[in-house]
Image (cartoon, rainbow, N blue to C red):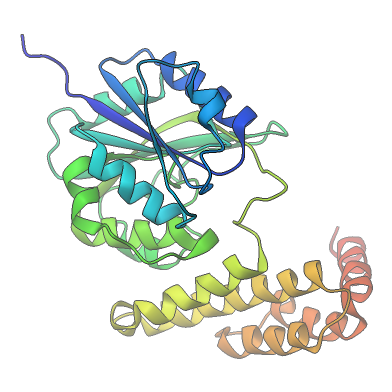
Length: 303
C-alpha cells in the first residue's frame, strides 16, 4: 500500500504571535498525516521567532523586510515539498479533520485542483458552500463575492496548480479573489460541506478595509479580457464593488464626497438600479450619520 501524499501547510504571519501559536497547534493536531508546516514571517524583524523557538520540527522563514502576503505565500511555496498545499492565514484555525476530509475529496479525481469547505465565524455564524459551486466555477470566481466561503484558509490546493499561478500581484484584501480566478481558469473546484475552518475577524483584518475595496475594482480591470466575455457579469460586479467601496469610505470618514460619488457609480453599473443602490446616494449626503440613520429607516419600513 502506497504512502499517503505529503501536505504542506504554509502559515503566513504578521505581528500576531498569539494567533500564530493557536494556528500551529490546530495544524499539529490534524488527523491527516503526513504534514509539513512552514511558517513565513513577513514582519521584517523575525517577530514570530519567540513562538517558533518552541517548535523543533517546523520550518521557519523570516523575511528581512515586509513583502506582502502573496510574496510570503510564494516564499513558503518555494520551500515546500508537498503534493498538496494548505495556505493558512495566521488568525484562522482548522478543525482537526479539515485536511483529512479534503484529501478524501481529491482521491481519484485528477481534474479537481481545489477543494474548499465551510467556515464558522467567531460569533458562531456558520457559512457553508452553495451546493452548485463545484466543477467549473470560473464565472462564480469572476463575480468575486459569490464563491464565498472559498478563501485561502478554507481551500486545499494541488501544489502543481499553485506553482503554476504564482507569483501573483499583491491585492491586499483582494488576494483571495485573484487566486480563485487564476485557479478556476486551470482546474475544477469541489468542496466539503462542513465548517472546517474557524475564522477570526481581527481588528486589523484587510478584507473589509478601504484599500481592499479598491483592490476589488482593480482586479476587475486587471482581468478585463476575461470580463469582456461576460459584460453583464462585469457590470454587476462593478456595481457591487462600488457599493461596498462607498460604505468603506463612510466607515473610515465621517463624511466625504467620494462616498456619494462612489454610490453614484454603483447605481450606474447596476443594470436595474434597486433601492440598495439608489438610497445610499441620498443617505450618504449626510455622511456616516446619514447612512446609519438611513439603514434604520429602511429596516423599519421593510421589516
